[in-house]
Image 1 (cartoon, rainbow, N blue to C red):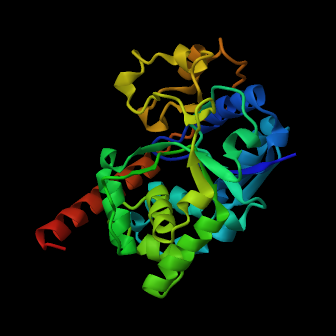
Image 2 (image 1 turned 135 degrees about the vertical axis):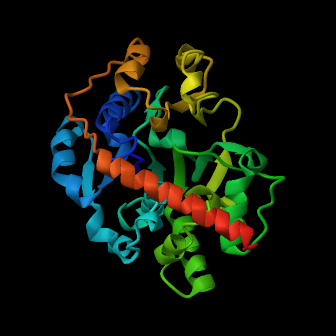
Length: 324
């Protein structure tokens, strides 16, 4: 049986992470309904050291899947080398973890999840990887030019904004192409690839744009990625909820209709829409069980994260004034 791996960076404390256990319950409820645990060779959940024991307790509810809980500190000691609060962006932290997946998985392809994703149609590993290539959701790069330009700057190449590129999570990536990106970053900067990315916290590089641009430069995209063919399911639903004000008008029912081909949708966590609200909308389409969980509201941590964001914004503004 063909299998695929999965990776999920998970935090339960911080600015918009308090409900991530509930979101994971929705994700795994959807996977349980629309696929089987046997689809996955390994389902890796990477958690900050101080949250490992608690997440292991909650993860018992998902133990029918081949869950592997990874202590972030055992693999990401490099984070400790950047001691200033504003140097570690939670956004970049999770992206580095995703690009690190080849060290944690045992298959060529792996599916990248965030807690706010959920499945909408039946799928298997063979739905995600067809003829040896990952079925990929393409979008014009001009839709998010800032991210493509930042990553191209880091890779010292053209962003080619007139072309299409890979879309956001969930996405299916290749370990071979991730390792190629690691090598290129180390070749360009003469240091370990994670240090390169962490040192460039002032620019908005993203994991997918870096991955895609480097694979394009090496001429490997067509070997590992392909768009869905007519009659094949696509990776993303036609519309997800990226902003809170879009929730009321969101036509969730159409994502589960027979004529809808998208396999996954998202209600973005930073909208602060509760898992219970999402459960109410989605429960007619698949059974959802949300376990009791503790919401960690740490105002000191939230304040520190806000301070970090404002510090980065101020530093970025100063850089622009200096023309850098």
